[in-house]
Image (cartoon, rainbow, N blue to C red; front, side, top):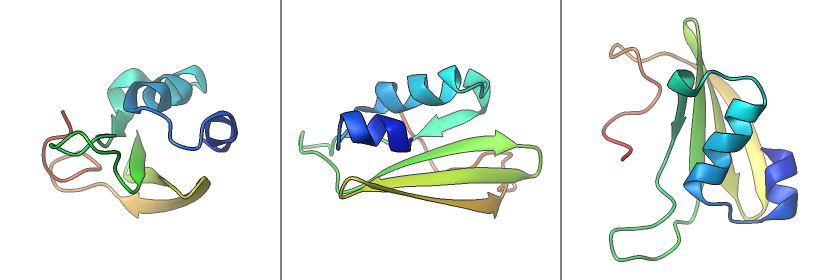
Length: 85
């Protein structure tokens, strides 16, 4: 994600997904938040998650920076709450 942000401070959702998949994460294990609000504005931060067993590797892009942490998988078997479409 850091390499992606270096090239584009506010990458689109599909660019984040593609970068994680190209890094070897199975597409089915990748979750990415929306990049635009319902009114069409850029969001303040993008979130991405990679499901790895009982954990989620969570990354956040905000202000051209990336922060990563590991959190437990939710009871739903997903990393995000709600619909990310």
